Image (cartoon, rainbow, N blue to C red; front, top):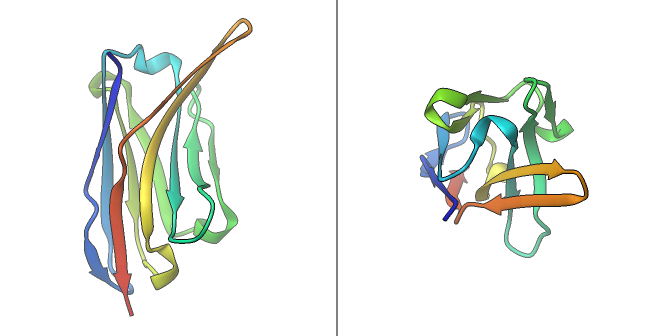
Length: 119
């Protein structure tokens, strides 16, 4: 059974840093595009950053220059380095894995990790 397990969420002051990790198991990790999403209370889940199998990276405009996504296929892990955090970054952060195999979409989510940024 595929599992994605996030860790690293915490309470931090504005301007601080956190590093989120997501470890996959029972998944052909290198074949999946990986992403970090977040969901704040009362808001829709949104894409924060993604990295595909070729290492191409995409960021939401609101986090460019502050957050950095990376992956380690050997460790089946994806990371999100978060610097210069703002109160508006407060949300539950979810790890996502997706691949398209012909007409089939395989997608998995982690359980989420809470990031709270105090002002």
